[in-house]
Length: 194
Image (cartoon, rainbow, N blue to C red):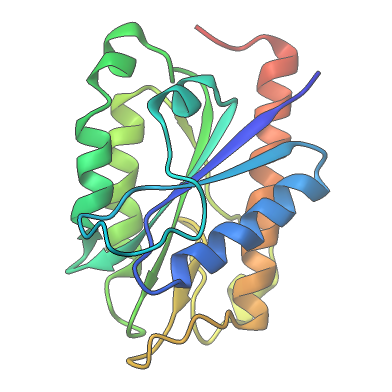
């Protein structure tokens, strides 16, 4: 039985995209299929790193990892606009009981990563998704000096917008991807859906 995990993100400078790719590696290591899709930016002159997401891909996924950079403690406006256009999915209950998690990147250590991750969970909860994070059994949560939270993977780019993930950030993103895939496969196998 194939299990499809959608890794949906918006990224302006590439840090969130780097996390998405590492999460996809974890999903694949767990034996699920990873589909990376980006949310279109308001500036149409930028070339996306991955294909633009379509609403049908959200409806058809078995699990979701959702990422956005921090904008004053919240998700980027582009990411919010995407969710604002998912009412048709909500009305039909198409995301109910699907596993989901969130990831982010900020320019500074205290740039609002955890606040953003929590705010990014709100539309997922309204859609009836089953949220997961990263348990403290992952040793990198105890060691990281940059990104990484129990709410989901994160990256701290610094003011230079460095997209290079630290070793701990990479390991946490991989572990998150594996856990999301395993949970999604278990839910699908057990037939836990709407």
